[in-house]
Length: 125
Image 1 (cartoon, rainbow, N blue to C red):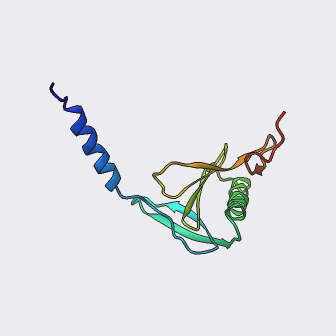
Image 2: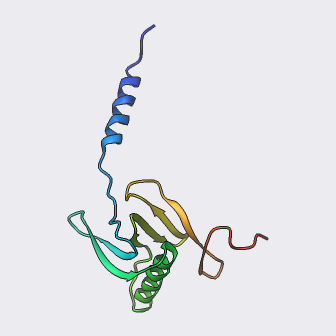
Image 3: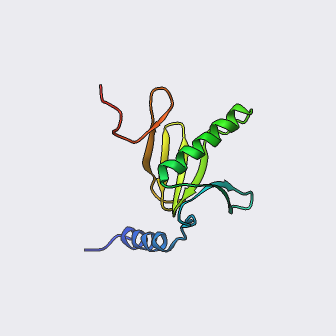
């Protein structure tokens, strides 16, 4: 029985992906950052507020996003960071991940009127 060349290629790909560099945010306790991607591919971390929780940081980032939009901005999505987690503010809600390239998990969802809520907090119809 002959092994196909797919298995060695798959193992090599897994080894490379395991060693690939992950972009992780700062882990400063309580500091909420607005993160801005730069043209050279780096990230600039702007301290926004001191926050007691990820939800408070997300709410402050959302308030900043809305303020920018009311001032004529057009950027719907926003990137933030809080205690070693990236926050991705999107139209569906706020997602979080421990790295920029890693899987994203739902932190807050948007209600029917656009407000943010903890998943499962809204009554089901």
